[in-house]
Amino acid sequence: MPTKRSRLIKTEEQEYRTRLSQLEGMGILTGRACDLSPEPDRLTFEQTWDELAMIHVLPSGVVVIVPAKMIVLSGILTTDVAMKTPWDYLSLDLNDLEETPYFKDLIRGLYHFPPTLLNPYLKRELPLDVRQVEGVIIAHGDTSVPPEYPDEKPVKVELLVRDERRNELSFDFVAKLDRSMMHKWERQRRERREHAGWINRTGLFGPARRQPGNQKSVSPEKPSCSRKLAVSITQPVTQETRKPN
Image (tube, rainbow, N blue to C red; front, side, top):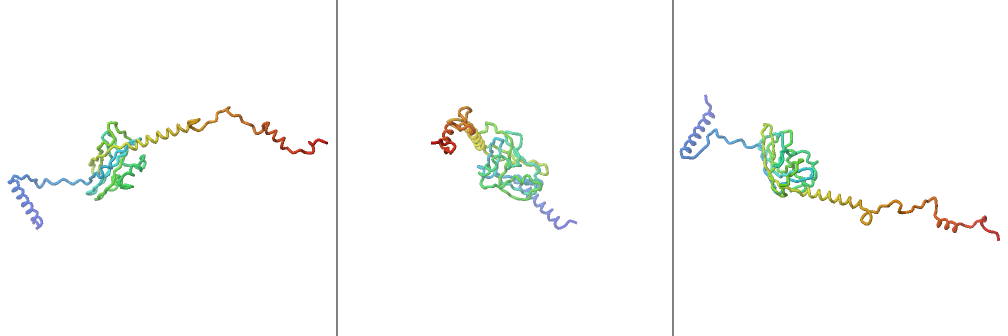
């Protein structure tokens, strides 16, 4: 025997289908009941502070810094995460950031120091619950930037995330190339090399070096003639050396 609730649902479905038929008769395109909206993405990112998104070129590779807002709409477990640049098939790492050269100098220019890192949210063993967090994503890797990419050029970087369902999610960001740290490192290395060369100089432009054979050394065991004369003059006259009158 159908319940009151089931009869109500059946009546609502009939009314819904009747309205759809009326709209279609008026030439208005409509979707069917089976055309449900797709499930919203459980994890999304929005890029923020576009002027601070940078790809820093370093002597040992690159460091990508992207300010973003992470939005989690339902529980999700990230099993793998990486970031890629358009010129290299190898992915950048989101771990061991403190070991990156110039790490503190790179994050010092952000809007607040120290910044909120989104990396720990993506590299964890427990699922993410519903939340909204604003911070920065930082990735680094041993990759070289091709010369055809000049400074200040906007470059698309891709954040790749895999969840517990083995779904591969992709999020695009735009960052500018910055070689100021590379130029700073090259300038410091040149200054150290010039300083080392200055120390190794001799003569008028550096510390003088003693050349062998250019000075005579006096042995302390053999006093000079002038020292003997001074001793004989200052030596007191004794009874044994005084002559008789």
